[in-house]
Every structure is written in structure tokens, then in C-alpha cells.
Image (cartoon, rainbow, N blue to C red; front, side, top):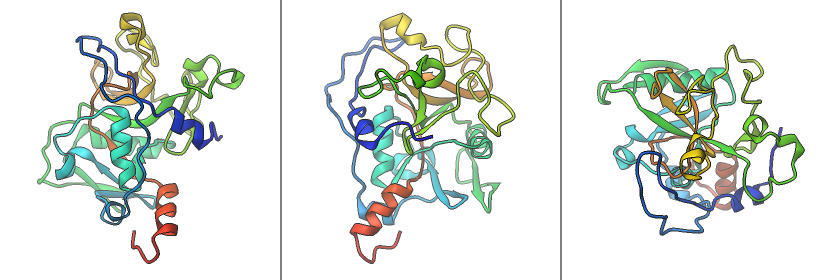
Length: 250
């Protein structure tokens, strides 16, 4: 189900920084940020760490240019978008499990839909990553009865603007609910825990690796937190660059 038009998503790309749960930090000095446009040359030479069902992916920690980089949610999207990619959207259990395995063992790489070990990468687990998951709590989401309550029905994949399944049930075709059973407030995710602490909404979806002794699971997180990320090919951006750059090889 398509959730919101692209124009509304663009308006939602403003960044907002607030104090973290366990730290105090000043407000962002970069207000009013927008989504980046793709850069044709970067698209043509984008990292292609692994391929799954026709889409290329890369984990930022495995790409030299981004190996030691942790960024907020919007910056992560924009890094991906410059490559004609976007943050990963995990619409199927198979794709979700693929990313869970990547997080569990960051020295894995994928060929022909099978993971293999590659010793050039460190074997340490990945602690967390950003995904394109977003709560529809910005301008354009008001008065939408189909999104209420937002904690259940308001989540969508921003990369393709597809609405997610209700957060209290397994998505269609899945054998389990990927949202964690616990978190900072010791309740099922999403719990918007940071709002109770400092008034910051947890509007972005991160996959956390056993942070709350809950295994690898989905969590709502305030979007200003800085994390590594996984990028996935964006057909929309690839088609745009192909149509506006004659002869480019993507």
C-alpha cells in the first residue's frame, strides 16, 4: 500500500536534533536539510557488496569511504541516495533475515543469495544499523484515520513509501514479528521511550543487535542518533539517472 506522495516525504526530511537519552548535546546547527539528489558518476560506481533479487546492497562498515562513519538517519539516507540507492527496506522475511545475518556476522558477504566468509572484513558483530523505516508523524500525516494509532499503523518504508504491517503483528507472509519484545521501557517496540525522557520522538527504525538482551530486532529510535547503515538500490533513482544521462552504465 502506498502511504504518502514523494512531495510530502521531501517535506519530512527536515532534521531535528534533541538531547540523547544518556547525554546532553546542543541543538543541530544544520536546520532545514532536504533529501539529496543522486550523483550520476557515484551511481555508476556505487559499491555493490552483495546482490539480492536484482538489487545491489552495501553495509557502510565494509566500504572504505564510510567504514568508520556513523551518521544520523537523514545523512544516512542522503549518502545512499547520492549512489542511486536508499536506506534498506525490509519488506520480506527473507530480506530481513539476510540483514540479520549480516549484523550477526559482519565478515559475511553474499553471492548468488548465499553468504560466505571474507576475511578482509572484521569479524565483530554490527551493533546496529539504520533502515529506511519512518513514522508518519510529520506534515501531511495529520487527519489520517488509517494511520491511527500511529504507534500501530503509522510506520512506512521511506525509500519506496510502502506502508508497514501493524507493529503488533507479524507482517503478511512472515513467521514472526520483527519488532522487539522489549526496550528502554521494558515493553514491546515501538515504545517512543525517549519522548518520556526529553520530549524527542523516536520516529526512525533501527535494527539493534542485542542492545536490550533481546537478540537482533527492530526498534524505534530518535532520528538524530548516529549509526552505520545499509544502502539498497533505488529503482526510482536509477531510472531517473538513466533517463537523464544518456549512455550511462549503471
